[in-house]
Length: 358
Image (tube, rainbow, N blue to C red; front, side, top):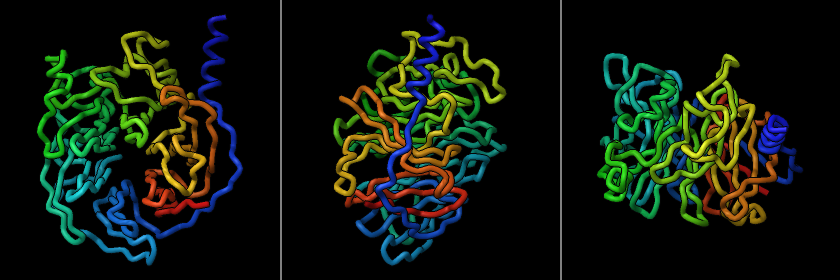
């Protein structure tokens, strides 16, 4: 009976229906290897390219201009120039920094906003630097015009995500200038933790969003062969990687983790995918273009090449997963909601910027 309950649980949390396509997808412009997207006005966006470019794109006249920058980046496996955010008078970049001796780190830099030349200065480095091209994480959100949250993947290091004296495998929280908030876990009961760390036990969180309804931070975590999840970023908590693998296995199909079921040591995700769909960026929709979707989760997928919509019920339960489309634009790397509620997507494979409307 216990085995049957587990199977039913996995089917419930992994099953999706296909939605009726009552929307339009339009390619705005071809790109090289885009990773991050941020609006700077109603008409213009900055796009980060993993290979090292930052582009200024006008979504109406489709003009593209390269923006100069001074980042000491390295294209290293899954790493390069990754997330980009414009907030007020500054631009923030999460990127793979070349730390020398073949080692790199998930790093964050800030520059005063310019459409022509961005002079970045580091405000965070994930330590230690590691010789690995895997799992940089590197999504960011800004909360209350004060705090920057970012994901630092565990770089393929597994249980390094359980070490609160190392950044890989954690969610970090810093002030916008890189200083440390005085109410971070280190100063509120977790004195052994590094001061930037907000939450531990993460594998490769390639999605992060700030809810426009409750102002909470949510993440999407790319599991191994199974164990993708959507969950809340929670103060001083632990998602369990790699003691617990959220129902998945290793890529070799071998057993993953020391425990096979959730226990009270760990944060329980709100929703999981077994087998993995390789979740990437995520948004909680708020806008006029698809007003019937307000409050719903929009989840992108890399391997599955799909965009999915999930109902977010009372901000603590996820249900009614629908595949909005699949195998149309390639691997979907990023999603942002435009100022008018239209949806903008970055894809790899068919590398481009896309607009989704009614």
